[in-house]
Amino acid sequence: MTIDLISQDLDSAISSKSNTVLVLFSSLGDDKDKKPVLHNKSVAKHLETNLEEKSISGKSGETVLFREFTHSSCRHLLVVGLGSAKEITHESFRQIAASIHDAVKASKSDEAFIDFESLPAKMKSEDNIQAVVEGLLLTSYEFNELKSKKDKKPASNVLFHIVLKESKNAAYKKAFSEGLAIADTVNFARFLGDMPGNLMTPDILAKKAVEAAKSVKVKATVWDKARIKKEKMGGLLGVSMGSDQEPRFIVLEYNGAAKGKKPVIFVGKGLTFDCGGISIKPSAAMEEMKYDMCGGANVIATVLAVAKLKLKVNVMGIVPSTENMPGPSATKPGDIHTARNGKTFEVNNTDAEGRLILSDALVYACEQKPEIVIDAATLTGAMVVALGNTHTGYFTRNEKLKKTIEEAAKASGEWVWNMPLTDFHVQDMKGTYADLSNISSGKGAGSATAAAFLEQFVEEGIPWAHFDIAGTGWSVGNRLKYCPKKGASGAMIRTFVEIARSFER
Ligand code: BES
Ligand code: MG
Ligand code: ZN
Image (tube, rainbow, N blue to C red; front, side, top):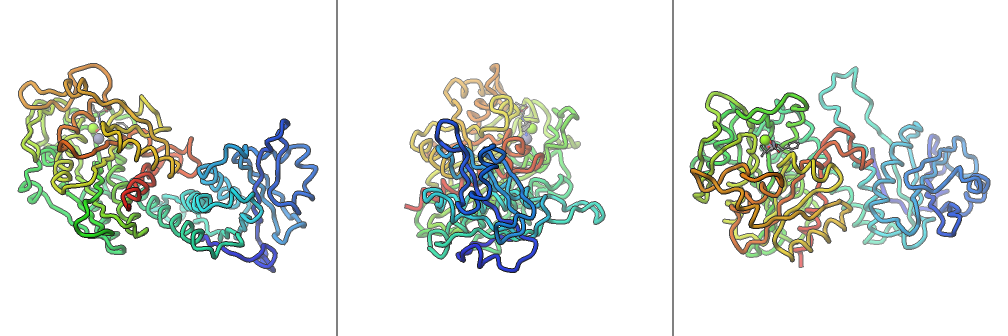
């Protein structure tokens, strides 16, 4: 699939192309009988009856295809609904772009012209252009990597044009290329997530990060097991002991601001397969635990995206990576390990491993004297129970950071929900024989007590937030049309990029 932004008027752009489709927007009218509006006056005239009868309703995501529509210079016409004019946001455009993508693909056309020119002026915004680019590219993502040739579906190779007279305007061009950069990196993170555990080990994840860093101005450093041991990362090391695969500690650095400027640090859980270890998980859906590195993948993608966008900010991405397996040397329930900051913890359930590898990474992050630290992790099943796959729950006790997060999420179109984190949750994580226990002594609030455990490894005074993406990291396609039904979603990359952007000033 290819997208461009063109400024010709439709007729001259389309001339003499054969299998083309013209994409027009419709919306629900805001008069009392909600008479649909077709945002292209000349075509609307030809479709008056359809609009009267509401066979084009304008409802969000509705697609109506008119084959061999002779009243335009394209061969076919696709009308796509935007919904109620009052409620349309850039996120509506992202989702609608998914409908456009799928309908054009199903129509077997090989070239589509999306008419932005006929939209009301306020909808012709940079945000909406960026959203359409993201929506199209994100929807085109497929994970066919591992299917043998005969089963492989042909990749979609539709050429999409966004038609807008003022497209030469620098702000539109910037929005367009930002959309491309962001969607590309989100798709890269999805690919890392979708790869199965045997083909996405800690070592492979590290190599993929190093390789990707080469194409942008990002410095990558990878520590092996010996170095991790030397660096006193007892959490990461302890979790890795049950596996034949060596752990890795991955650090990505992007310097877009002055050297002395404090970095914005993202930390991501890179558990390439979590079977629970000795406290082994039940078999049902255990295969999904290949996605337990999505926090790490999304952090890697965030740094790459920030670098592609050349944001004037220093950003660091830190990903502790390991498998959680029940091999002969595995950590046993009751074992006690020491994290990088000297705090000790009892491992009373080896399946609560994410917090252990993150403890060392958070300590390391704070040593870098950061502006803020944000982590992303598929940390608790309790998060899925609490919020399902609609919202990502985040925890922070810093009001200013909370505001930054809310604004960034709004700007990116992602849904987040602020969760409670209190001293009571901290109480529940006290150990009997060590400083801390890795599971709560209390009942319920499993996501908050996990966050409280993480907080013990963040230096006081450093603004920190924890994002539990257990529910939103994969299989969100029933809510978001531009995400694969079952695959990795790339959750929070767009929000994290916006958070980084907020530190440009
Ligand atoms: N990776 C899991 C959390 C998870 C489970 C994410 C299901 C998405 C779907 C994590 O390592 C884990 O196993 N957490 C335990 C913690 C418990 C033992 C305190 C959990 O949530 O059950
Ligand atoms: Mg686990
Ligand atoms: Zn896990």
